[in-house]
Length: 191
Image (cartoon, rainbow, N blue to C red):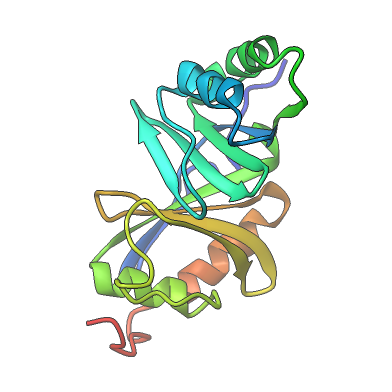
């Protein structure tokens, strides 16, 4: 059996922000009635995090639960725990209408770090999202287009942006993030 590697095997770029392939992450798509007590309990049990509200992310112990649509969550966990978490979710949700899929190997994750204003600027160059601090803050997620590809991103409490896209477009995503972070490209909108 081959060893799993992330889409870009740890690639990184230092510009006015740092763009880094965040490595392997376990990712599980859960679709169902997010207001159901059964779904809420199952998510809490397997991740330690609560089901977040609309366009929000909750986290606990290194796990993230991201709201993706009115009936969809993305659970981000340690890569090696994803198969067991998937099985535990299926068991907990038995008898409840749901869909659970381990999508870990179909996704890529990037981490952007640096000056808070510069981070917002880099994302704003690529995504049609209001990145002002009053419109987008820690614990929020947006599912949108990043240049020409579908992506989602959130800002954690430490000020780091996490970007998720399909693995098949990881190289393109990394290159557009690098271009957005090139020194000299700052326009000074966010500070």
